[in-house]
Every structure is written in structure tokens, then in C-alpha cells.
Length: 218
Length: 270
Image (cartoon, rainbow over all chains, first blue to last red; front, side):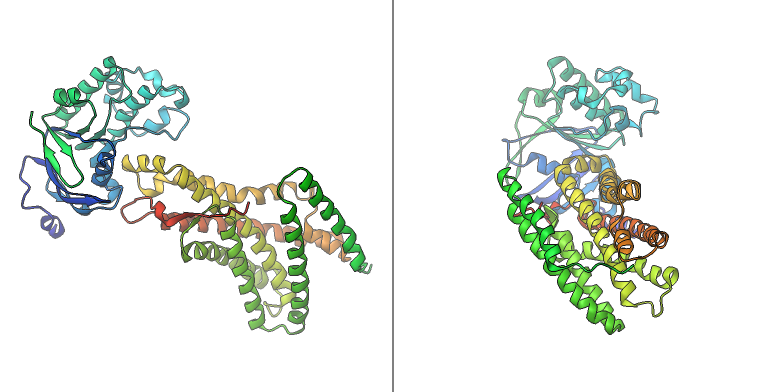
């Protein structure tokens, strides 16, 4: 408990879900920003600037300096797998390691809401019997979204979640994400190269530069 | 029956086969012609040398000499393990993991075999200790190098899969379990295959040697069975400990896969 109370940042207040203070990694940063509860924040920036690396640093996949807070508690208090279950990234190019789609969902297949979730992004339950090699890029992307949310993380970092989707499925996924956000009082950081989508889906938008995140005027 | 002594001429005739093989390799442009010749010469020199060394060792069977000799064998095996990997663990640690795994498995298995099973007196009698350790090290070396090569190669190729599994909140053990299991299997397949073929397809080298040397077949068979058991367990434990140590080394405290500990060898020796 001592460690817990020491790690609470003075800058955090109740409505702040996720805090980043002086985050530096590779040649980027320092970045500081907060994500509030039920807030969806857009992240844009030219390609190659390090958006994906920022998400990887926030999920503790690459070394960084600075501090990350979840509900006011510093990331170092969590062990790494626990941190990644609460703060997770949905990668732009999801990978699959078993032959069968269903094998990737073993942990959640019995949950009642699972079928509902599959339906929400346009799948019926037979998808679990499919071979991964049969999936299209877009199908992989939609399934990865469900897979990534299996631990019901409170902070979701989306790396271009609709990059391979047609407009119909984009609408489904957008609705699914906002539903998730409100039901779980989660925060979302949404990386996209589509300004209209960010305008439509996010509450505010950050533009990434090498050393700062600039709040975009809308 | 006395052993028929081989003359230099006899060995020379056998060497002609290898020279012909080397020529064929040249015509088929396999690029192996020099390797065949060089390693044949190296093998001849190594074996002649060990023959001389063993003669001295058998004459003066002191513990220190046996330990010294087995250390040289161990370090040579460690070097071979490293040389057979295309993607290696950087720095001394790569050598330490391979050598350490072989030390743990080969040495403990041969020590127990000498002390408990064969029960020679003293236990380090070089006529038993050195050949036994040699057979164990040779096989463990193959297993460990195959397994480590597979492990580093898989981590290199499938790093993003490992990363995405970590993102789902898996620990490094869970995220790398398939790769580690696969590597362990790769390392153990040769010895399982040779157990399957022993007697049916192949008459193992040691047994052949003993029978040629005049030992009654059933005695030779019993020794061969013992050796097979020892080799199988030695290889298995060696492979498991090598993979375990390498996995432990390649992930940090925050369960990140540290590929910066790997380096791609400039010239793959395969």
C-alpha cells in the first residue's frame, strides 16, 4: 500500500483515466497528456513520425523513460502482463498463430457477450471454425479487435483500426468501439490517417511531432 | 578373435571414396568440395591426436588429467554449438548458455553412470569416462545446437506474433511457449529417430566398434542400450535447459522480447 500511495501522481484527478508524463522513447518525446474516462482522443501525424512506437511505449513493449499512470497508479506498480491487460493496443496488422480462428478465442468463447460482440462487427458464430488462412485482411482486422478486448482493458490504443475495411464494416466497427467505450467507461486513443473519421469519432485530436503533441483546433 | 590392425594403406583406400565425393560435388557445383576435403583432414588430425592423448591418459589415470581433458572437450563442443547457429545470442552469454546446458546434462549423466551403473573403480577411470563423456557430449551438442538455432530463428521471424501475444496480457512464458516447445522438439528429434532405428536399420557405431574388437554381441548390445538411454536423457535435459536459459535471457523483467541480444552471423556454417 505504501508503494501504491507513493506512486499516485499529484497531477491526477478523479476523471483522469490515463496519464502520460514526460514520456520519451527512441528519439521521440517528451510527451505529456491525459485521457479522461469515456474520452476518445484522435492521434494523427505524418507516417513514420512514431505513432505506433508511442502506442508500443504506452503498452510497455519498448523501453521508455517518464511515467505512465492508470487511474493515478504508476505503471511500475503493475507487473507487465497485468499492465497490458488494462492498457492494450490493437495492432494495425494483426497476426494469428493457430490454424483455427476459434483457438485464438479460447479464453472468452464461453462468455455470454462473446456471440454478441462477434455479431456487432459482422460475424456469425461459425467464424470460430474457419481456418485463419481463409480470412481476408479486413476480417482479420475486425476479429483482432474482439481478440484485443478480451481482457476488457480500460485504455484501448487503436492503430488504424479501419485501414482495411469497407465503409459498411467501418460503420459497424465505429459503433462497436463507441459502445465499448461507454459501457466500460474506457478511454480510447485512436490513430488514423482519415481526418473525417477522427472528426466523427473523437472528442479532440492530438497531432504528433518529434518532440511534442499539439492539440488540434477544430 | 584378435582385432585386424588397419594399415595406412587401408585408410588411404577409404579416403579415395571421399576424394571422389569431393569431385562429384565439384561437378554438381554443390560448393562443398573444399569443405569435404578440409573437414576430412581435420577429422583425421583430431582423431589421431586424441589417439595419442588417450594413450598417455590411459597410462597415467589421474583425476586432474581426466577433468582437464573433459573440460577441453566441453569447450570445443560449446564452440561448435555457437558456430552452427545463424542467429546467435550476442556476447559471452551465447557461449555460456550452450556450454552450460551441455555441462549440466552430459556431466551429471556420465558422472552418475560411472558411479552408480558401471561402478568402475576409481570412477574416473579414463578408459570409461572419456569415451562415455565423448558420446554424450557429441549427441547433446547436436541436440542443443539444433534447438538453439531453431529458437533464435523463430524469435527473429515471429517477433511480432510474440509481441501481439504479450499485448493480450500473456506472460513471456505463455507468449513464447509454442516457439520454445517447438525448439525443444527439434532438438530431441534426432535422438528419438536414432532410438527408433537402432538395431533395425542402423548398428550403432559404438556397438560396431566393440563387435569388431571381439566383444560378444550380447555384451556389446547391453552397453549400447545403456549408452542410448544415457544419450537420450543427456540430450533431452541439455536441450530443455538450454532453451529455458535462452528464453529467460531473451525477455526482460517487463516481459519484453529483447531482440537486440541477437546477432546475425556473417557466415552461416551450414
